[in-house]
Length: 154
Image: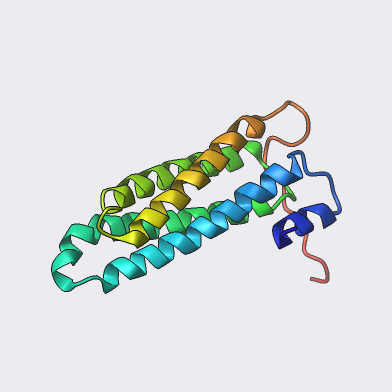
């Protein structure tokens, strides 16, 4: 059992998403963040004459890594949950992994790191797409952001 799954299981309030699916998506996003960051760095380590051809791939890797990290963080927070905001973030991540996966796939025959990154992006995209239908506001519970609780001891 991953730490993500354990943290979801110890959450003191109700989480309106299936814990196994949610933890799988968060773990996939975290893994994709690492793969994209490592791929960008590996691209930068390729011979200098290849860098112009890899520039878009590097940019897509870095954008995808940042978006996946932010999405994993949003999916890890449940207090004051807003289904519309979460769904928008997940949809942004789906686009990011699609763009990055396609970009890396263009170089996958020449660079093993791009092949692995494309694979990670594709797997993460499938996990995210499976989560989207579960993020529809249900009419039950909060759909609007909650007002922040006042700070204690001020």
